[in-house]
Amino acid sequence: MPETPARSFRLGVAGPVGTGKSSLIALLCRELSGELSMGVITNDIYTDEDAQFLRSAGVLDIERIRAVETGACPHTAIRDDVTPNLIAVEDLERDFAPLDIVIVESGGDNLTATFSPALVDAQIFVLDVAGGGDVARKGGPGIARADLLVVNKTDLGPYVDVDVARMIAEAGDAREGGPVLGLSKHDPVSIAALVDWVRQMTTTVAGGGHVPIDPGPMAPHSHLDSHGEPFTHTHPDEHEPGHAN
Amino acid sequence: MTSSPQLVLAMLADARLPTGSHAHSAGLEPAVMAGLSDQGRRLDEIPAFARSRLRTVTATEAGTAVVTRHQWLAGGSLSGVEDAWAARTPSAAVRAATRQLGRGYLRLAYGLWPEEMAAAFERGAVPPRPLVLGVIGAVTGLSSRQVAQLVGYDDVQTTASAALKLVPLDPIEAMRWVLQLHPDIDAMADDVERLTEPAEIPASGAPLLDEHAERHAVTTRRLFSA
Image (cartoon, rainbow over all chains, first blue to last red; front, side):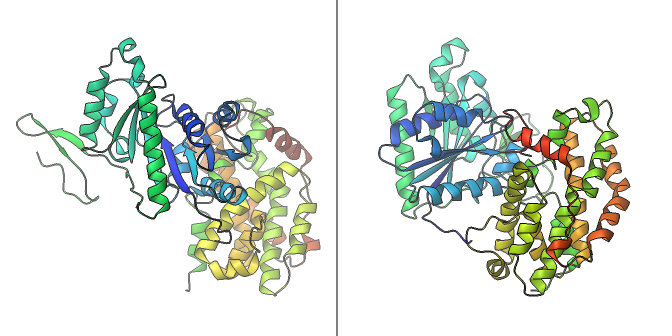
């Protein structure tokens, strides 16, 4: 490529509409912009409201927040054609060199949308308790294999009849022990844990100690076996023989 | 590396080509927002729109790509071609969108043909798409006619695909439009395939499309960038 300024840690934030991706990013900017040089890319579907929200939050220089238009295809823009996002990331890295971290917010999409490793080094997948306590258990590539799963708005559990502890435990099962973080903007301990994770990941990536993991398109999932008992498996490749049961 | 020009043409014309063009509608969304097709009640206005583009702005873009290809193969400079394109593209919004698309194609082309692209474009250059396509055509052995057809086909296909997101429409009907516009694409290619000099690039503008594009650039609610 013709432009090669210092490369930042590129962190993706994905998850369904309304789970709190923009607020999470605003929180990270507020907590970390004093110690890290940051940039943010938003992917809006119909407006640039996410970028405007972050700019109006006053947590980061507005020049460091840029919006990418996705042509009604938010999943395409982070997965199979990352061109506009990579151009935006490279522009930020050029204009504010050296940047420590660029956070790329996906357009709110469905449970199967994850970032291509060509675009980000690591990714956070965001769910919220208000979306239903069973969402984490159902799984999906982002839930199962993002670098960090955030279960947001834990303070709302009592109002939406969700057992938060159980939802987080089931998320842990879906991730086979991968990190799960319950987050509430009213819970300083949870905020500190999130900020610590991002801080440590920034250091790890900058030191070359992290290989991007692709959550992939297909999550482990369950079928009933011949005795009516569920069993969970993955598809290691497309040519696996039919589901034997 | 040798590659088949026909297959390069198919690859470049494939909607799955990663260049960021899925965020563009070839001016259709701006036109629909201004009343084209009356919210889908007069759908035949959309292929007519594509035909009008082939005769005006798309002929300019295709002519620019053809002349770029020729100039690059002849060892000439591309700056005169870029100036000629800009002079024939009066809308700043259209120029910005075309340069945005150019960056996407250039990013891909740098990955696939790094030495040739580095020789054609300076570091940090933001050329309009027809310049990038012209150079790609030159380095992959596309004929001038293939380059012109590619630009025409891409414009029609972009319009038809965007229509599926903007108006109520059967996808088969959209592809019928593309098929029925093949003679118009070829007629446009007939007109521009032999061009070699920047001064010959068609200057057949479409002022209403430019006005739509300018309005679209400042709207706060849109599916497509341009």
